Amino acid sequence: MKQILALIAGAILIAACGSEEAERSADGRLTVGFSQIGSESGWRTSFTQAVQSEARNRDITLRFSDAQQKQENQIRAVRSFIAQGVDAIIIAPVVETGWRPVLTEAQRAGIPVVIIDRNMALEDDSLYLTRVASDFVEEGRKAARWLMDETGGDCAIVELQGTVGASAAIDRMSGFNEVIADYPNARIVMSQTADFTRTRGKDIMVTFLRAMNPKDICAVWAHNDEMALGAIIAMKEAGVAPGRDILVVSVDAVPDIFKAMSDGDANATVELSPHMGGPAFDAIEAHLRGESVPKLIPVNGDLFTQETAAEEYRRRTSGEAR
Ligand code: GZL
Image 1 (cartoon, rainbow, N blue to C red):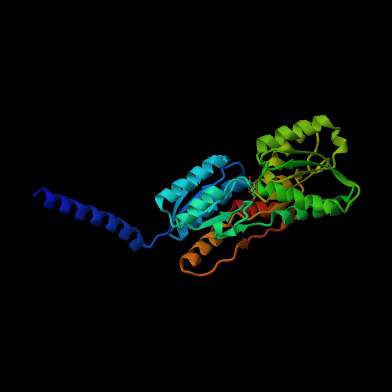
Image 2 (image 1 turned 90 degrees about the horizontal axis):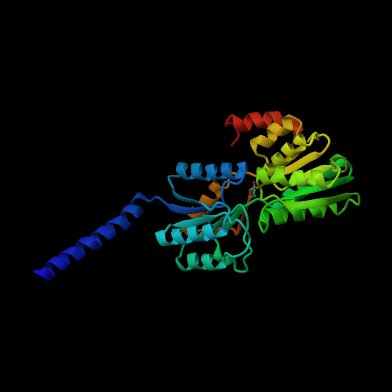
């Protein structure tokens, strides 16, 4: 009798597991784990919302993790997604290095990984399906070209760097420096990380304004709008007119920088589209259909100046801008 009961229990258990597996595949919904860096900037918040909205539009089950800018939290999240048996993983890596072990675990589990936004320094590109991102070097070049045109190439620049080790910071700096190298009278006189945040951008700008006469500073180059907006607060508190006494150029094109530009407090920003979820989900779905996917799916952005700032602010705060 006991043996018969054990057999029946085993059959019920198998049926339950089988039905659960069947249930997920029957409803056909993809389950994707998304390891996001954090919410350190207005751009990142918009990016997160855009990915979540895109997942809802596609009926994709999105498992979301906010790492609060800590790599160990991202690695923990990816391991959790692997344990959950998600269909794919999307990761915006906070820094470039330290990813090979966990990507190898995902590869062994047969789970495709899409790198989105920032980059990883990987020798083995079989560890990820594709990367959806902007060309950060070109963003730095665009910012520098505008500043050199605006100043005739004669400019003492203070630089607010993004997160140390982040590809966005490394590459934007590289592109900017590449362009100003052609202008003998353009030079970066002070440079320090402000970790892509508004608070740190203000703090570091305060130290810059104390370290040298503000009249000797021609421009602030900030690796993102958030830090530029912090620098604007510091300049105003020091009695300096941002956008006029000291030019302000940055990257992201968040609504607040358009407001600052229309108020004359900032001068230029290079757009970084937050709409990278669509291309990422397209690549995952194509891969799962057995189609090949390119290793890089670029998103590009233009440089915006004060001339169109008021209209851009209206478009982007009215929900009109896609
Ligand atoms: C760039 C992205 C940067 C943004 C910042 O793709 O990683 O990180 O420019 C954000 O706003 O902090």
